[in-house]
Amino acid sequence: MGMIFLAGIVVNNSIILIDFIEKARAAGKDRLSAIEEAIRVRTRPILMTAAGTITGMLPIAAERALGLERLSPLAVVAIGGLFVSTLSSTCPSSTPCSRICEIGY
Image (cartoon, rainbow, N blue to C red):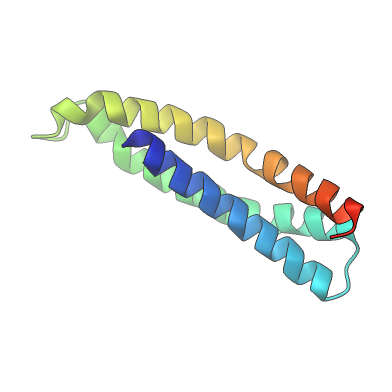
């Protein structure tokens, strides 16, 4: 369940970045400036989404949410995974996009 949750958020973040890059490229920007602009513009909403989700899961992870104590391990793992995946989502999704664009896509 936690893997599905994390995969959905990480894939959504990557799709948003790549879509932004493709729109900038269609508008005439070169590859590197499109990638830099996408990372600069989309990083704040990605971080806000992650921060909101992590903040919402903190009471569950701390076992302070009544009736949800059994989900505490899931919340702890989801918080850790979301933190790591959010920090690493900009580079791993933009680097392959850069390489694919370099090939001629």
